[in-house]
Length: 129
Image 1 (cartoon, one colour):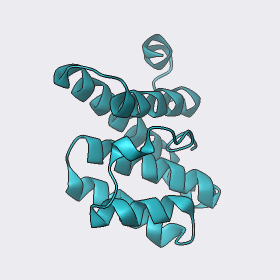
Image 2 (cartoon, rainbow, N blue to C red; image 1 turned 180 degrees about the vertical axis):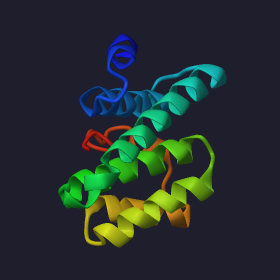
Image 3 (cartoon, rainbow, N blue to C red; image 1 turned 120 degrees about the vertical axis):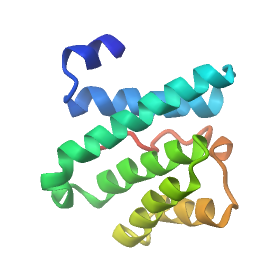
Image 4 (spheres, one colour; image 1 turned 60 degrees about the vertical axis):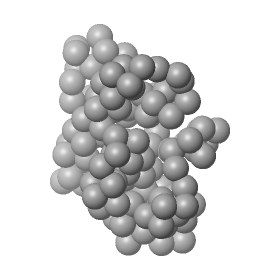
């Protein structure tokens, strides 16, 4: 995945799968703190870059695709213990698609009633864009 991103660093079809994979690894694979932080920072970078690339047409994406990308960012920032940035993305999910599963999970994150470990078996979070 790193080679693919190096070859085509603005290819959303490469950035999103790497980010989604690294966020999942961050929440479910035992790693040293340094390894985990390195992978999560890379995942958040990939999601942020995707959002930047999609900015001109983000509103035309499906509500599910928008919510997944924003939720992936919230999850990544939450795992990096930056609740201010995480909540900014969770709030966007809620505002954009208030009745979605991602919005409900976002509400729980904001209230402190959910953490990334609870999402271990959720396969979809952050994989679309």
